[in-house]
Image (cartoon, rainbow, N blue to C red; front, side):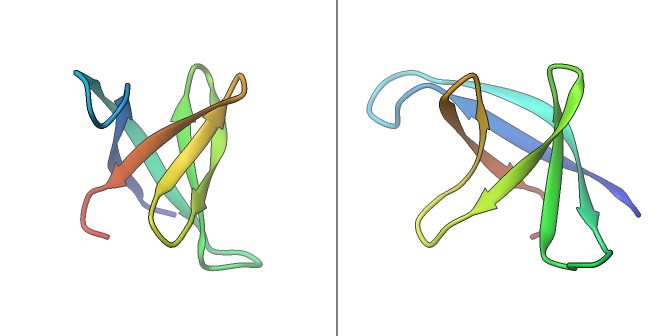
Length: 69
């Protein structure tokens, strides 16, 4: 399992937002398309959707960009 870099984008697209660097890893067993992001002390599942890739933390969806993917 290789650790990569991801960028969380806090805030709305129409307003100012803050970017935060986090560690990201791809879970290769049993499902190769599952990504995890380390945020606030734990690994969180990355939801890959048609128009957005995000994690959910405390009920808020936070957009994430994964470097090289």
